[in-house]
Length: 210
Image (cartoon, rainbow, N blue to C red):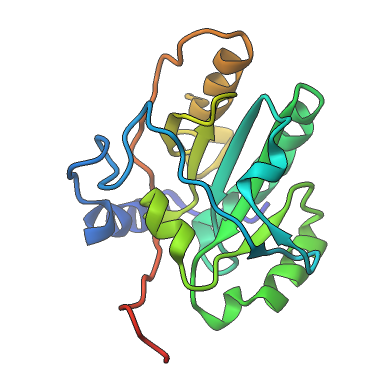
């Protein structure tokens, strides 16, 4: 995995935190759209790297779903790719489905580029292109990566960061994996929300590009 200095991590995190998209507001503590315990917004017909359309309901048999809003160009998102692959491998046999979603409009984040990235990194989960950014808006996804853990009833039980450090060897708190373990054990999630950090998702104004 490519290494980034603590200085780079600090600058990126600070930029994300200062973005209007992550301003504290009505929804959750760090999400101005969704709150913990809410029913997750459903979605359908979102194109994936397999050239098929995907929706939340197709994973109806999963005991839990992890939605990861990510992209190709953000160094923070890139730093987490191997961790996400490892987590899906660890929890797949336990009935947990990871789904990556890209809501960014940059040229490096087109569906064609997502296909290349997924192949090179051997993603073991679907990678969807949120054309129109509807899914990202409905979840209040603010940065990349921004994760949402949905329980069996498809309620949001955790949202925020994957863990507490962009640098894998310095991680001390495994927020996402701890939350998944709690859901599988049918226990309450101890830490339900953390401040997400990464590169801000660029949401275009309605009608832009039309």
